[in-house]
Amino acid sequence: MAGRFDGKVALVTGASSGIGRASALAFAREGARVAVADVAVDGGKETVRLIEDAGGEARFFECDVASSTSVEGLVDGVVEGYGRLDCAHNNAGIEGVLVPIPEYPEEIWDRVLGINLTGVFLCMKYEIPRMLERGGAIVNTASILGLVAFGTASAYNASKHGVIGLTKTAALEYSAQGIRVNAVCPGFIETPMVMDRGVQASTNPEAYQGLTNAHPIGRMGKSEEVVASVVWLCSEEASFVTGHAMTVDGAYTAQ
Image (cartoon, rainbow, N blue to C red; front, side, top):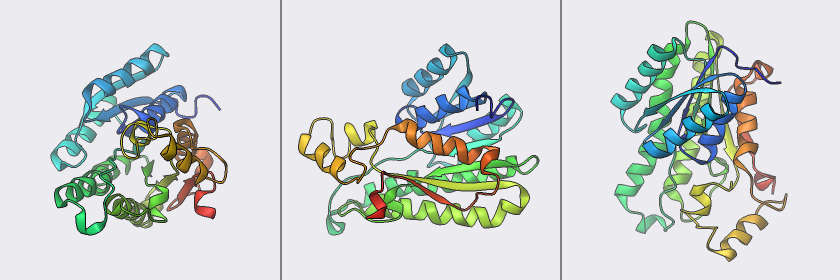
């Protein structure tokens, strides 16, 4: 299956670590030139280095997805630099805090919704016009918490439910014009967000075991397992798949 994206350009946001970094590396392995976007400069540049060391081609773009000006500049920069945009993985996101709704700080609510939901909206707002000439594929990172809920995570739940709604809306609006739009809904994945921030599973054995037990498959997922679905959804093999929220969750939502 190597070379599915030869000659194509893929944009990945939130690509400095975790699922985003794994996505950027996977697109590069499949032959794409990759635009690595993140607000975290050092991590983003490290992703580019990893791609180049493996023989791929990538460029780093500093971008705050919650800023319309920043996202517009990102997409313009990608197209000006590479001449086209074929695939986008709108992955940037943050976890917020874990407290009940009455205690949820409004400034953190605004930040989570701004990055996780408005950020996806802004990315598609500027990506779609650039894809209309030759078609393209977009995958938005939602979550199992876009399908079910997790107590004390109101902002994250709301943002990821919104991502799925946006994904379906964009699919209805643009599938007939050659742009497919889907989402992935990961379970709990061993990324810095889960292991080092949020529930801090790497330093909390009880939390780690609890998240492991929550998945009927008996473990948490790996970034590469999520990314395999992202790459497939962007490929021609998924040419009749659009408007879909694909779970990659070890049967978490099947319970």
